[in-house]
Image (cartoon, rainbow, N blue to C red):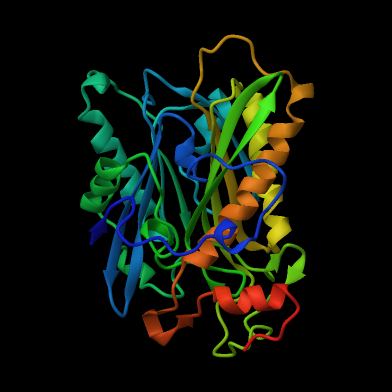
Length: 351
């Protein structure tokens, strides 16, 4: 097991390669951790060749059952297991960190999250809390039936969560996932924007595992078009995407649900198929529950655009950071090679 927010040197990201999405500037790290008070931790579980899995934790500093944060959730296609959805939708409040993992490990992860929280001093006497755990099916590359993610991995991800740069690609919950014909994983990005004359930041983190045909800056990109060839990947009917959006803008649950919708809409920009078997979810929360006047609905358009841009770039980062992986049953997913991608975007034939 590896447990760290940034265990390996960071590969080039979309922006490093000159692939710039939208007009808004990113935050200093171009990551969800640019939002003050938001930390990310990973625990990666590898036992080659059969296990490539893990857990990723998005941890707002102040969140707890007695100090919930306003939140909204949107389901683009509900073929998935987003634990905690009904209470979150009913009350519009987030009581726990948000954990992402593999489909059949989600229930163990939720139980471990409850145990971790009940040990905290601020949860003394708590008799009810709503763990929020999302998942993607990593069964193409990992022995999903083994349910390899266990309590010690959940605790490692939570305890290692930190601010600063976020590891992307084949790490944590993204270790065994793939998207749009390529190996993918965890990706993140952020944007700064102005609402009513005040600056705010919005950050997105994705667990990318969905079908479709990749589009980069409007250009279609496939393994074949890049000259990669190789064996086919999982069927387009399978896969999912979990998106977590954080912002320091003062928003209530209803407005955050509108933000979450835009996060799912953004997947269309990169070519998502939204197929029958895809679980496409977004959860959005604000770190400022008691900040006075809310941003009016009519003033939200810049934030909506910033979310669209951040999610699009986060997906691209998840692809560019990933590495070719051969796993369970000999299945292989090829990485998206930056040099061939840039050649294709410039109209040159990939070498």
